[in-house]
Image 1: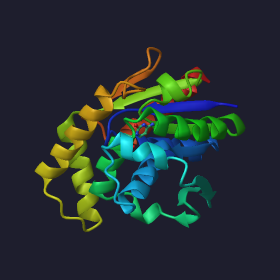
Image 2: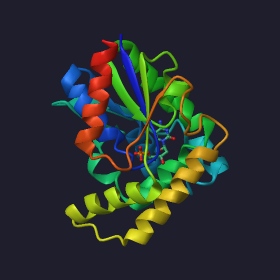
Image 3: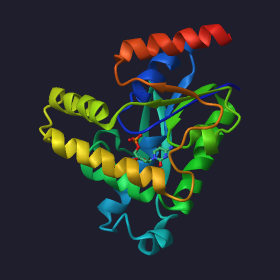
Image 4: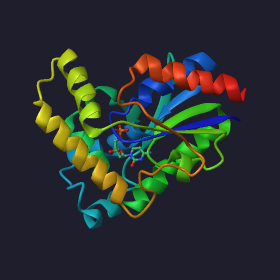
Length: 220
Ligand code: DC
């Protein structure tokens, strides 16, 4: 099986790149952030604080997370319910970063991620894919851009969807999430030593895709 790992902070363009490469290569795209978001949604619905590890741990086996590919699109199922439309809110984004600090939550999701990669050729995006989940991935990419550039992209995406969060708020949320994702003790956001590093602050999505596709062609 072949695995490609794409890591980096929020808004770096990981999922757009991963989807483009997956359709080009015929691999399955796996969005691991969506799994942390789904866990966060369960705790939020139960009224459990996603920063309260002691309250969260006893409930860790009370829900079932399932990843299904429907017509080439990843859908997250929570206790049998398709929750794809519910996991992109700012509250769930921050909740996902909170639950991701807890090693036991990570281990539960990493097991699913490794199983998927053992059965399929995958392009997996997240924070710890190259360093922890798939350390033997054949290609590792670490995508980054300045916080301002990443927040601007997210702000424009939101505007296109009719979400009117002010730019300053998008930027502040992103910085807070990156800080927590980078500073956590277990499997933090970090580039693998053997990752290809790409700062795409001044590049468009298309330029990023062309650059990485060119790289893939070079390494065969
Ligand atoms: O990629 P995303 O923005 O959907 O991820 C949401 C949060 O989930 C992110 O802030 C940190 C966490 N996450 C993680 O810790 N490890 C991953 N492999 C993917 C996401």
